[in-house]
Image (tube, rainbow, N blue to C red; front, side, top):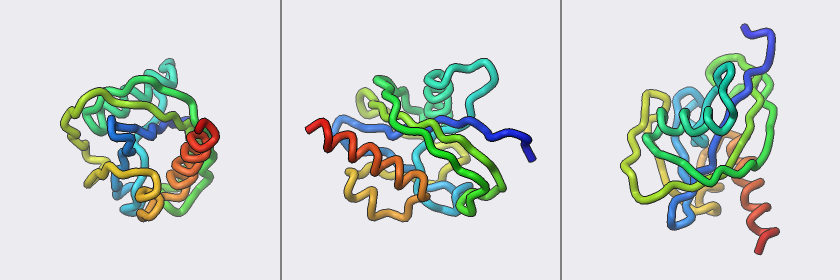
Length: 140
């Protein structure tokens, strides 16, 4: 077990139809989550996020904007006992590049915000989507 929390980055990815990408992951007990992962030593957060999204989905992201920070302390929704610090961004993709999932996810889904909130989401992912929805509602 690590002595310190693990910093991670995640992305709420929007396509040209303003739908978000969610992936279903066995590591999160088959709940839907946003893609992301660990920040490597010496790696900047945005660089880590771009790398993780490319590894997990084959997508290139741009226009990263900070969204939120959350703490995940030994939650039951992850397959291992971990303490994560989630640093979440929202961003976009260009075009319709084919999604190729790595071994961390079984399937993916593009959906609008309201439809996403009806899915079986990991709780931190639900909060991330709600945070994004609140920001967008304030900007209207």
